Image (cartoon, rainbow, N blue to C red; front, side, top):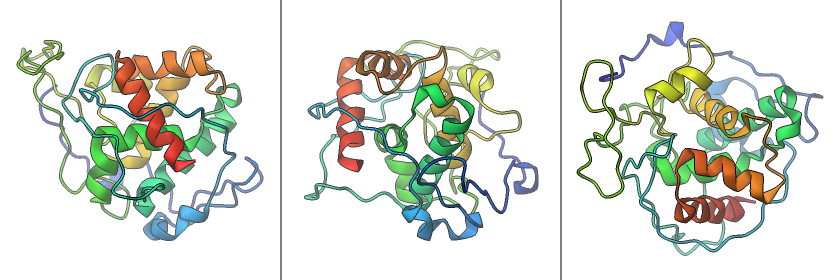
Length: 236
């Protein structure tokens, strides 16, 4: 689809206050997104995530394409690597929304955080504006087959496609699973869309085999599954 044209912030779907009190156990509220850094204390229902050993991965975009956003899977001397406050808020809000909309999915925010860590280091360590939109658009490499395991994918203009945003979505997949008017470069929109994609088809993240199948949709690589789950466990 070519380069993403950023929408004016006035057109991006955003609420100044997201009230989730009483909807999901453990979620108190998420107030004014301008103060997300303090919202890491907001905790939706947390579901157990089985530990898988961390390992190397070729990185990923969604739909089984490799974007080259490889992550070592190791923490910098910390057993609980920190997540930028606004990124943590985005993952928790997405999980809370999905708990209401698709309660059978049991989406834990830590799984979304694991994907966000592997795909973009949480939008380049939280380099986003007050609404969660990347200050510099995030793109994966052109899917022209030059990187190992990359598929060759062209957009409707004949140009090589690129995964977009902090959760690295291909434009066609984004169009199918995102809410209307969403921005793939926005952490809140991307986190919700990633969860919606993983939950689609009625999958239950509490069941290891279904959770694995969901992550394999994102990147058809068991090394990728291991890496994402390794980070998810660290965040639990």
